[in-house]
Image 1: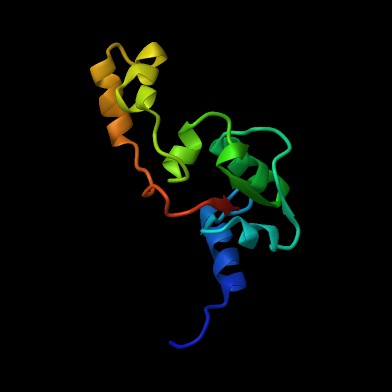
Image 2: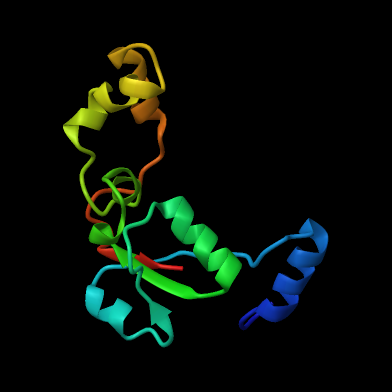
Length: 127
């Protein structure tokens, strides 16, 4: 098969089979902020958000939303996206051991198990 797939048909079939309650979401990662600013109808968050909140906003509102590291609440989300380095407070397990696990060693294991994009691969992304 040559050429571009009929994405409209693919998406409608996926929605039918999966019985989705909201729009499918895609994430595109960009190297330069200038590219983000050229996207038509792109919105930027007015308040700091988590990645999960941003995805929910996009899914429920059908908006195109762009963000860089400063748009996220805390370092967790931008570090997962490779926008910033994971802070030492997280790497050594201290952060996770405050609430979610009993020991710093367990917190360190949790942090090590979280998939992350390589640092510096992108500067921002949009949904």
